[in-house]
Amino acid sequence: MVGAHVGPDHPLDAAADIGADCVQIFLSDPQGWERPPPRDDASQLRSSPVPVYVHAPYLINVCSPRNNVRYGSRKILQQTCEAAADVGARAVIVHGGHADDDVAEGVGRWVRTLQMLESAVPVFIENTAGGTNAVARRFDALARLWEGVSSTDTSFEVGFCFDTCHAHAAGEELSAAVERVLSIVGRIALLHANDSRDPPGTGADRHANLGQGKIGPETLSAMIGSAGPPVVVETPGGVDELRTDIDFVRAALAG
Ligand SMILES: [Zn+2]
Image (cartoon, rainbow, N blue to C red):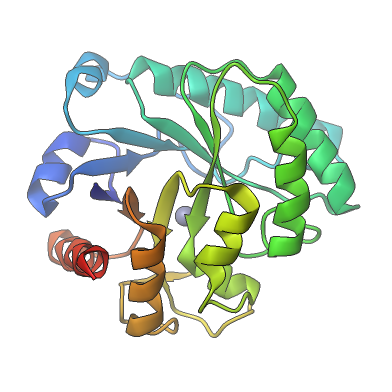
């Protein structure tokens, strides 16, 4: 299953246009704190054979030592999970976030968040490109996060979403990155296949079309092949660019 992040307006039409098996969308402003509004096409999305993934807003940082940021983050994550259930989403993807003060504190705040969260859909935590004391940027921190996550009882699945651009931006060595991540989290629930406009380790989160950025086509193909499906590309451009990126992923999966 290979798809792309698409605009929120007509995701199923967009999927057909680009030949995607699945799509990822935002349900609210990715840079805002507003509750996701109800969608007129909720029942269509629910009954569609095309799986829909929901990306939570970027501002969410459940690890923040600042109470207002943490409480606001938990609130909109909860609201996003409810809105995602309304459209029958396959999962909600949320960035791991950063603690500012201390990774261990950040892990504890994630555990508390998961204990409080109620979700009818799985929640996938994604590795991030940057952030001070980020809990899912460098793999050593991810290992600590996953220890906390795995020992937390939830009524919903908590999975890991691996973003290739973010691992590159984090400065992780990419040749065995998928294997190292798998040894930590057990399973990659969703791969975000993105190239990067920036050199490794910069912390910059600027996605590029696959094979056109600084990761290198061979490394990127190998990562996609090792991770396997489902895969979503979050790359720039229109129909042609996304089609080309989806083809790149399918070729990489075919080995
Ligand atoms: Zn991503």
